[in-house]
Length: 77
Image 1 (cartoon, rainbow, N blue to C red):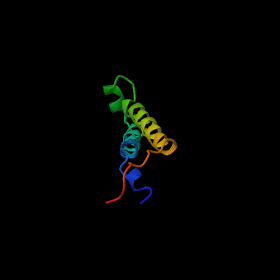
Image 2 (image 1 turned 90 degrees about the horizontal axis):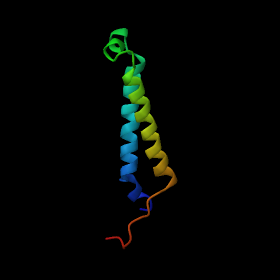
Image 3 (image 1 turned 30 degrees about the horizontal axis):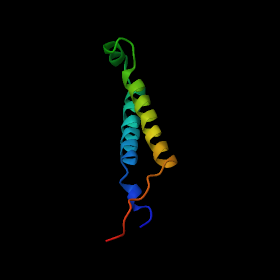
């Protein structure tokens, strides 16, 4: 029962979601066609957004790892 409270920490959930979506969007940015780049005025927006999402996901996961939440006070029911 010691680490169960960490399973539902929002930092873990948000970090994992940003990391997964970041991988998907970065993959779409790597596979972007010339027509896609033309629409975005030469900026590979999917690549940059995906990298930003990966960085944010890594930040949340690192924060979760380095600053664990204290377990709630009180006895078990």
